[in-house]
Length: 498
Ligand code: F6P
Image (cartoon, rainbow, N blue to C red; front, side):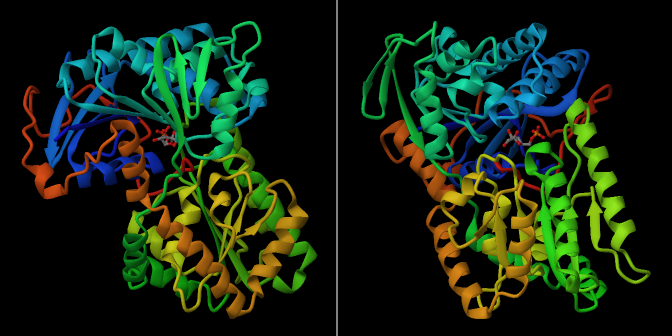
């Protein structure tokens, strides 16, 4: 049986799970199939070790590498999160570009490839995740690995006219053709990528054969694989968490008021300032709700060293303060805005305790909070999902109230509709969405991708996978050595990508 080797920037370590749909999805695949997961440790070091540090838990071998802090700054804060992230989310106003960041991005990718090559066996199947590691296959091929390499993009892919803003756009497109299979969240992302093959001035010579492309003498297949959640596990986590103290205290504190919830990493793509503005408009337009509803926004901080994230944080603090100052009463705070995170199970309980979820990103690859909200509901008395059509999840969750994230009148009206929606309609909408969430769950996602990548079912059950040998690496428990700093590892909140 072939061995699966996943590679991503952020990795979910046994005792320090990471934020994001990527972390949850890859972990689900590896726990079921077994294999290796290589990624950044989340720490910086002045002298990174020559080989990855390895921790084995159950049938997964976690291999982590540290990055130098200057390198991390240009690669992670720079090219990944100030250049590619805004560009891929169509946010050209936030886009920054420095050639040195691009060089660091290439250097870190080359380093990942070297570390990976040291772990690989000839019959391994490699699965690379997300925009931080687009050039990895090119570097790995240079190191003579010729097994299957797949790539999945967890975030949106922009159309040609947006991508062209990046000076090195042609390299990005070409690098995505170095894989055997390149997967996207939605048809829109796939079409956007296809549009980029026709780059003016650098058109990439290719021959098409259905979903296959011949580029530079290689064949790459393109596909759409919408990521999902573990529907049954979310449902049981949510049910159980209703008995948890945190959830019970929240419910008691509401004094019978209805609860609107938002759960997002603090990121300008999540439409949070727009959402707060829309809630303010809702309280103004439908004043009967004043004193009767509470909006809980959970927004753990992320990428705090990137300027745009500091700006959005300030903006949100201002709007939340203004709103509470304007509408608050001695015994009622309209918005509860918190930056701390909760365990995944508690979050699922909080979602179940809410009557309405606001998932209104201005651009999002998928948004797994939307799917988790659906899976966490009591089917007998479900809450209502208000969803942005600019999230990948909107393609599947047609039972949601779809509303443009910039349209505060539309969101205000959707809130009013949701809060007064009759039980029969709530159930009908929820049934549609739950069916979709179950059909395209997390197991469906990785099974489909890996089947298309390998042309076979490499998926053994976890018991079979657990007997695989994992030789060739120094093995040690992940004791944290001095001089290393943990950077931005989160827990619980997922991304649109999540
Ligand atoms: O899905 C998008 C993504 O950037 C993932 O690649 C990442 O794991 C997650 O969001 C969280 O972001 P970060 O690793 O920058 O904290």
